[in-house]
Image 1 (cartoon, rainbow over the protein chains, first blue to last red):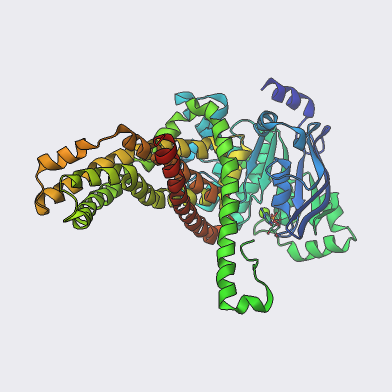
Image 2 (cartoon, each protein chain N blue to C red):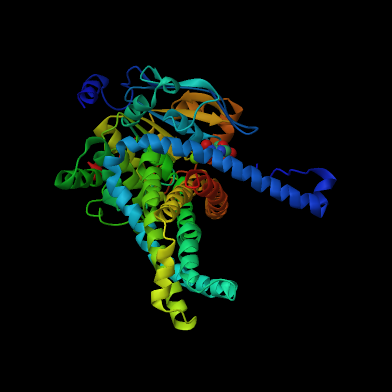
Length: 281
Length: 277
Ligand SMILES: Nc1ncnc2c1ncn2[C@@H]1O[C@H](COP(=O)(O)OP(=O)(O)O)[C@@H](O)[C@H]1O
Ligand SMILES: [Mg+2]
């Protein structure tokens, strides 16, 4: 934990104050059978930065994230996290590294044999041996951070889609991770709920000050949550830059995606940016 | 692999070719599944080092595999014993003295019927339910989520199920043996005109502890097969709800086949090599 606070002290917070590279994806290739999904991905995420990977459904965004946390093995290329190459880590080292990650899965992936509280408490119980009242307090604190106090006795099946995503968020930040990965955090939610999740992500970024990758096909969410946007198309990263860079790009794939995909949610303006956090702070 | 045709082209239209194609595919599936299961078994054995921390999970699984299977085992074994009594009486009539009815029932139950029928009925129930549960966790990314938070799914999910089944199958088999012999005893007494004294005398006459022991060793092995094949099918699940259904079916088929195959292997090993020597 001291490591974490050291890092935060030097890293600064929020947009534009990023430090050295934390995650480096180098020439990553992955196929399933004869389907080439990733075809030479290069991506660098710096300390404290939020990188959005934007791309159409089925382009391999989830596959990319699963490589970053070591759930899939590259056919070719490397993933380097804080200077360590994932494929060279032994089981224990990988476990220790993963404890410093938090991941929010596309479908929330809550354990449905457990209550909400047990879900959020599982990493704490397993890795820190926290039990009893201390565990209950910590779980409640995490749930409060995502605006869900007093639901820890419920089962995941009793929750709405948006609530599940928020519980997944609370679980992902249970161990105060240094790196948070979000897989389509707003997909499948109504626009209002999606907006709340977007704001929650930004609020958490400021509070826990983690390096993050947000994967999405939602342009608004990308603009709102990201410091930088990487556009993924046909298994490659076509462009990395700000939303403005994307809008003014003359790359064909980028232009098509922007032209097709951008529909601002109701009640927000195109260039809203990271504002409107008041109700969460 | 499931979709690839073994016998491509026109030959595939021939009914015989289709049949052999299906048999071949089932065989390949079985081999693949057993290969994956072997790796899983090895990793579960390594995970035994941390069984202390997983004890609550083992107890919970023991309840689900053992206690919840009890009604099924009671029904099956009582009727198995009763049928064995009727059949044995019919087959032995006129050329074997009645006292041997007790011997025949007791021997066939503890060596064969108790362990195998228990394994088949419990296997159907337990391996399908393990495969469906783990399969659902796989397709909804719960297994990935567990892995991603640094919790080993083999230690947390597979190992407790295997340990629980290894312990519970012999326990259930003891219940089954007692109830099946009880069922045979009741039928012999009530409708076959055999006095309790003679039935028990027949049982005692050739009682061998190694018969019971052999049966329980088989039950132990069957417990491993049932849980391991359930876990293997579940963890290998792909493709949504259909995939989960397929996993449950695969688990039942592979565990039943393996129970019968290993029953033969163990029969040879135990009763003609080890105990026979
Ligand atoms: N485990 C897997 N086995 C086979 N194919 C996969 C697997 N995971 C993903 N794919 C394929 O890779 C492609 C990209 O998937 P994914 O990363 O989930 O897309 P998305 O960008 O929507 O997250 C899809 O065509 C999918 O079918
Ligand atoms: Mg995806």
